[in-house]
Image (cartoon, rainbow, N blue to C red; front, side):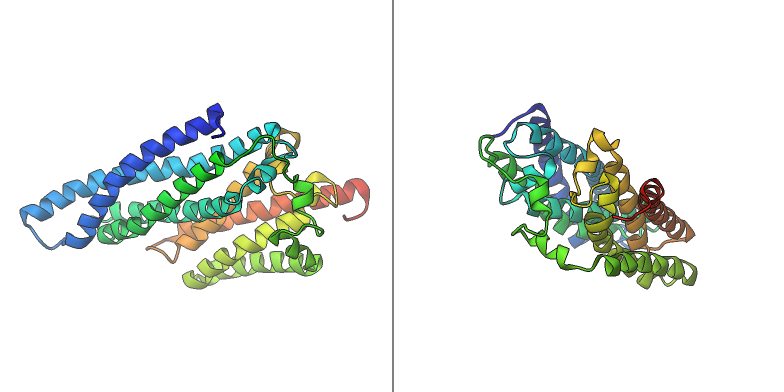
Length: 315
């Protein structure tokens, strides 16, 4: 078992969350099966009281888990200093068979957890509470995803071997790598950049059209396009090195922790964009999505422009 104060803190929090999430799960199943807002029976009154308890538990677990993702990435980056061959979080993720799966699951859970919180907020804003049964039904599969995340996280940290040589990010994120990520380097960069800016312009267009389903789909599509573009193109301008494609290194102090800002902007922009088709939404979510997506695009573009102004060439 690989233990540091940060890893130990994650384990303790996971254990606490698991206990309370189990309570919320049983309440969610009961409410989902028996909820009837039109009933005035004693059992319905009891369910209403239990719904406040369950929703409060779920709300604070999900809020904390979402914030804890940044701490998880910070932990991976910190423990890379004691793992042979690792230079950043990428080496730690590659050190175990479950690392990559855990990252993907955590990202998926963040979006789903945030969507639950959005649905909960919409439910409380209406006196009729139209989404109560839906949000507790939504939490049932979320609970199993949460359990899967805790298990994978435990397995990953338990299987780390400090003395075992792992690949550095320069090896993992390169065209010569044998990993699945290496296939991305076959993509034409100019086409990828055009796709990046094109998808953003479509988001802007459908912000004015106000077709919430297409707007939501475009934001969903913008996530993989943005991440791939960041790895293959924009990241090299942050590092000012044409061969450096790591999506983790700019989370370090050498790059002023700009990675946290980059990923936060992308999440806030795409999440609010996706959520417009998930529940009743107004103009605010459209504006919030466009704002953060625009800031994300501007931030990455500034790195390219500044590099060109300093050196007179593109990478």
